[in-house]
Image (cartoon, rainbow, N blue to C red; front, side, top):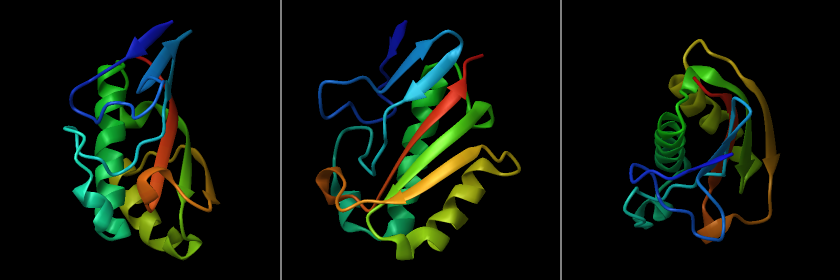
Length: 126
C-alpha cells in the first residue's frame, strides 16, 4: 500500500491521505474547492468555480498516484444542493471528455467547510 501526497492539490484537512494506491488501484479522498496551497477563498464562489477546482485537485492527486482522469472507473459526487446537478454535470463532462466512468451523485446536508461539491474517485494505476 502506498500513501499519496502532492503539493499540486490541497493537503488533507484531517487524519487521512489524499489517496491510497493498493493492488493496482487508486482510491482518492474526496476533493473540495480548496486551492493547492490550502486557501479556501473559492468556497465563496458558485458551484461552477468550485467544481472546476475540485476536478483540478482530483486530477493532480491521480497524476501523483500514477493514474489519470481516463483511468477513473468510478466517481462519487456529493452535492450540497441537488439543484446543482445539471450544472456540475456540464463541468464534469468537460473534465472527463469522452471517458465516462461509473458514477453516483448524492445530496448531503453539509460538506466540509460548507463546500458546494465534493468528488472522490477510484481509478486504475498505470
